[in-house]
Length: 125
Image (tube, rainbow, N blue to C red; front, side, top):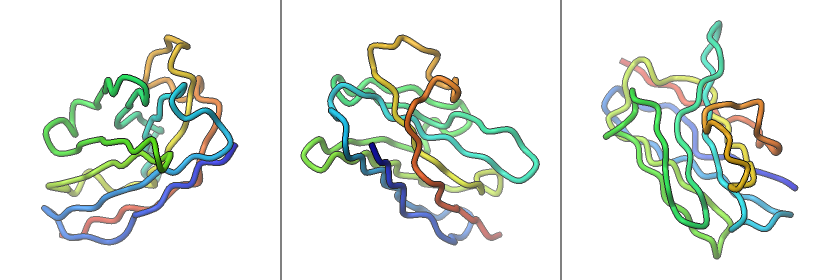
């Protein structure tokens, strides 16, 4: 199983980025994808979660209304659209996969089995 995260970069405050997470080697529809981020000196935190099968989502309160999730099962890819980026958003963003029938707290990163490498998001003021 492999997860590939991409799309990070440098953007100004108020700008947008779209992150992608592409999975291979698993039955994509049976999984949920979580996005997590970790800034220097901070703990990893859950940003967003989407169930591939039914599209249900969960969000970190701070990003609600600014970030959106979408999925493309034909491409085994989940997209995290990040708009109105704030100075508090820079971090390494990673995606992870967990079977959607696990019934875990979506933000509990220790429950996710498969991880992609991180992609760096930088926001300049």
